[in-house]
Image 1: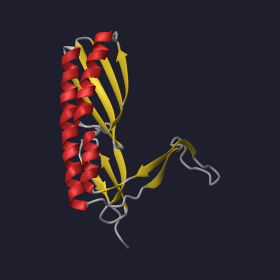
Image 2 (image 1 turned 45 degrees about the vertical axis):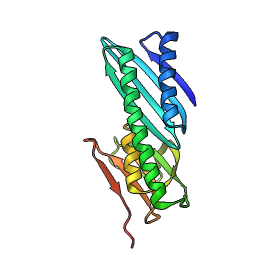
Image 3 (image 1 turned 120 degrees about the vertical axis):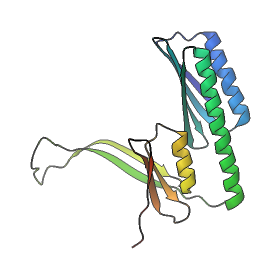
Amino acid sequence: MQVSITGHHVELTDAMKSYVNDKLQHLKHSFDHVVDVHVVLSVEKFRHSCEVTMQVSGINIHGSHETDNMYASIDGVMDKLNRQLKRYRAKLRKRQTQHGQRQTREIKVSHRVLDVKIDQEELAESDTPNVLNHETLEAHTMSVDEAVMQMELNDKQNVLLFTNAESSALNALYRRSDGSLNWIEPESA
């Protein structure tokens, strides 16, 4: 397990780093598939916050907690992560008993962000927008319930592309501005 600890407006003492590492070791004992952990400790006025992002078996789990004491914030976020990991582990066990060891198929999905000129009323045919960002994602095979669980575990993730285990079609799940989740499934022609 790779751990990185960052501090914003707070001096990271050896005692604080040791405390975070001890708490993370307790999480590792309860769930041994933790690959990477990034911890951000920050202080703003009287608010001490701790944010943790974990990569666990191909999914990202995010948790944050804010109090008036840094150690209480660390304890709070570790409790949240422990509950999330227990829920995830229970769903994994349920899925394995229901489906056995099914074949997983991953496909790569390309995603581009285009620079469209909105200040012009009409674009010439030769004008093509510039690509600002290009990203390739893997769409893992999962059920809709698993996709919803992954979106709930990572509140910073707004869009999830996945291959539906039931229909083998590419589906999307996205978070709306009000926090609700919407599911897009293509209809068969």
